[in-house]
Amino acid sequence: MKEQVNVADANKSASKKIKPIIEIDKTGPWVHVTIPEYNSWINLFLNDKKVGSYRLEEGKVSIQLSAALPYEYRIRAEVLKK
Image (cartoon, rainbow, N blue to C red; front, top):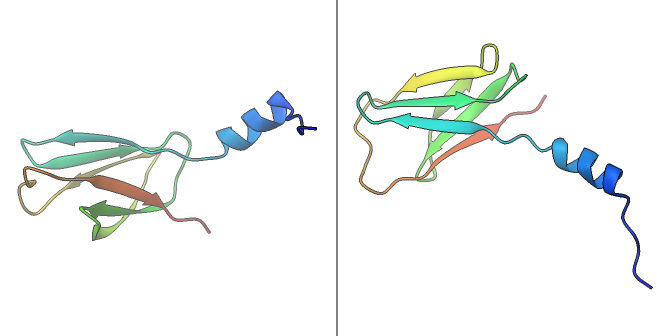
C-alpha cells in the first residue's frame, strides 16, 4: 500500500524553503536580491564563484558588481542560516 501524504503537512514543509528573488540591472551592473521577511546574511555567486557575503536589510539588498556581466552567467544567492 502506498503511504498517503497529508496535503497540509506537505504545504507547511514546502513553505519553509526560502527562495530568493534575483533581479539583474545590466546598466550598473546591479544585482537586487529580495527575500521577504528575512534579515540576515547571504552569499552571492556568479558562475559558481563567490562574489561576496551581504546582509539583507528589510529583506532586500542591492549589490553593484565590480565588472560587467559576461554574456553567459548564472547568479545564485545562498541563504546563510544561524
